Amino acid sequence: MVIARFMALLIALASVPAIAQSAPAASSESTRDGQRDFDFEIGTWATEVRVLRNPLSGQPPVWAEYRGTSLVRDLMDGRANSVELSVAGPAGKIEGISLRLYDPGARRWSLNFASLRDGAMTPPVVGGFGADGRGVFYGADKLGERPIRVRFVITQVSADEARFEQAFSADDGATWEVNWIAVDRRAKSAAALPADLAQAVEAHNRATVAKDIAALSDLVTDDYLLVNSDATTQDKRSYLADFEMPDFRIEPFTIEQPTSRVDGDAAVTGGLMTLRWTQRGRPESRRLRIGHVWVRQGGRWRIAYTQLTRVPA
Image 1 (cartoon, rainbow, N blue to C red):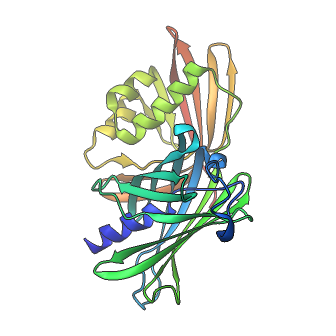
Image 2: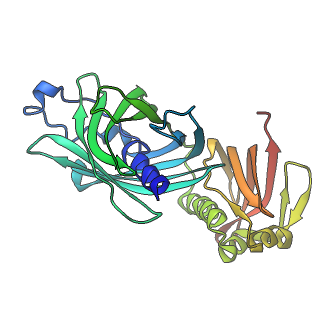
Image 3: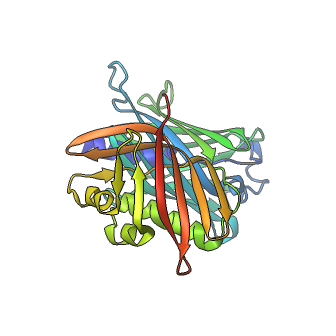
């Protein structure tokens, strides 16, 4: 229960990307309107996270790593925004939703998070951004039954990269221990896809993680061929049979360096990815370049061929 509470607290504060283009210094919060501070962040990000699994323990640090995505949406004309976080790694999966709200009277932001594990909202962290574009937020919480202070720092590295660092303090801020480091890089889009093909690509990725066999069957052709990174091949029946296995699952993934080409009723999409999956009780991970060949059949896009190529680590 303590671990679950700690994980929820971590995600609430630092797993979601947040960048300001301009920010209030502490002395100017009463005069500066920071309502648009999160405008830069709207969109989709590839997220890499390192989590300290034994915070404030006095023991040698034990870190876990995760990869996935953060999707940031604008709400109420910039007065609020939401973040959908989904990352996974050998230690498991972290999923949750953050709601960030602007208080125009106090001219400050509060960050609030609910983990999909239990749906409970954690105590917020509150603060804003300085003139240097660096955001600092503070809050109070408990680690187990131990009262702690929380500091959450956002740093804009570049227009397409942000860093988030969270620390806990058990001595009212005299000393801090960093327990969460997240780096977000803006997901690069390939050349704009036709709307119906873009929807098919998204539907296929979603069905792959959800193990939606009916949707996957509909999204690949009857003569579908998958060439795996070990040079083995699978037809449609064999491909779908993997998803029918009770212990088979693919973790959420991000397509990096996406590429695409459309030529009439044929198209190619793909990119780099880190594929993590579990099969027969064994967790696996592999760095791959993936390519899909799509054909339009009866006015609908379907995958006819997939090539997986292993990328050296």
